[in-house]
Length: 229
Image (cartoon, rainbow, N blue to C red; front, top):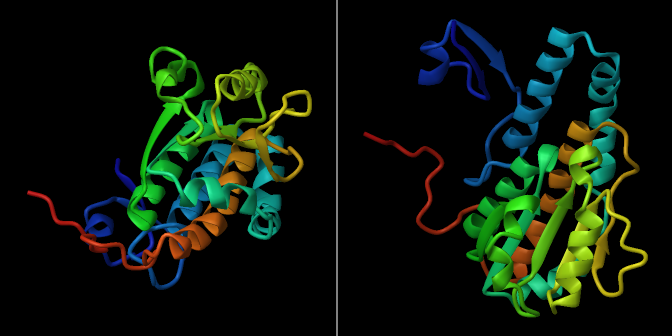
């Protein structure tokens, strides 16, 4: 059985699928997909909640629209100056935020023409940490579950070796001198919290693209539909 999550129910993918779950995003006005990414994650959460009959997930799904609206209003401007001046960026996540780190890195490349590479928090210590410097910002998406263990130590270690550290999510950096703490909503449910982090990031992304002189809606060399053979 094939099931597709699509914004366009008449698309070739939908026609080739046995079951179609419309995302109902509305018209896609930008080449870079943002709302469809969030909608896909929300739909997957609802599927898992129904399949597992998990009351915590059901509650998180019900609260997600209001939390996404609140997340979009959070001020991540502390990250603007370091990212606007950078030539390369690292994004870090783990568990629920691992995919979020990859999405952030992709969007930095697409919309801001800024080279960005994503790593898991565990992987980053095994080699890539050698890249860290004051001119090489590290954007940390910390999860609010057991996968978040060690993120406070990681943020502190990166700061001590001279990194420009930007932290969003469930990390207490109060005892660590230096990292820029980006605001996040109070923890509710780890997967839903991760989706809210990327919503906040998208707000920063639009401003960052303008600062770097790029068109976030029409990235160069990109088309909305990519045909592969």
